Length: 293
Image 1 (cartoon, one colour):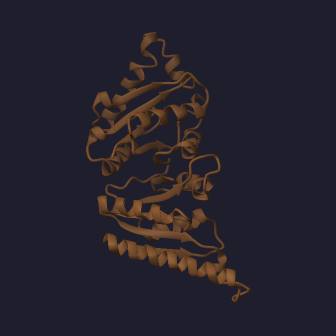
Image 2 (cartoon, one colour):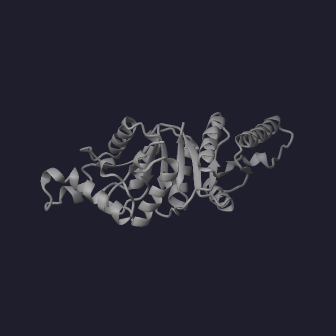
Image 3 (cartoon, one colour):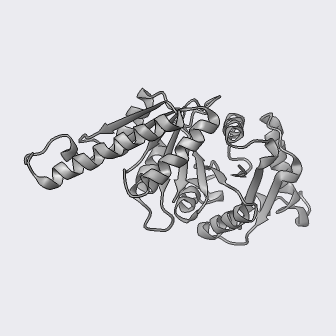
């Protein structure tokens, strides 16, 4: 697996840098499979106004030196040849995201790693907006870490939250492949409709069909996990509570190291790729892997 790590200097502390590199190391086979990239736009005023640096270096070798210095400080080893500076003269978040995605595609990347916060305020649009734009536009899987993320030394427990929709079977097989590769336990979580648990009309054929369909999917997942020899638990909750809160609660109960969700590409992204994912990343403490459909 090959990964592109979107990295902006002066934005993350050493712990977050080490944590992300350690995570990426569990997805990739070799350190050289991770490429660090930074999209320089018109928003990086600290680069454009670095008058003590020769003009021809301000948007090229200078930001690369900053990144290499931060990696060294965090004791993260990356070959300088794998640190790439991309220049996109724009103020548009979407345009800068597209630049990153195009680069990742040319590198045949399987994964893009992103942080969802930025510490420079007005110097650049908030990184959360950058990450959310990437969620909607990327055809490549995304690994997101937020300001409160706790980075595991080893991913031993994966928490996959899914909608039991038409693409669930495909998504489950992808998650099982990941679990086998890194030898992790899997918890599959589904937030069911309230009628899954109770209804004023218990004889309603639509409700009965929904319950049967949901139960059938859970049983199929258990069989697939058994065939794949991946330890697995399937959790279905039907509560009057927000989906993010249910996810946080169950992820803590499962002692999860990584939360996995799936999302469609495009502005009409699936629920799990929209506000739910944003809340998981912003408010949660787990790194989040987004599988793109």
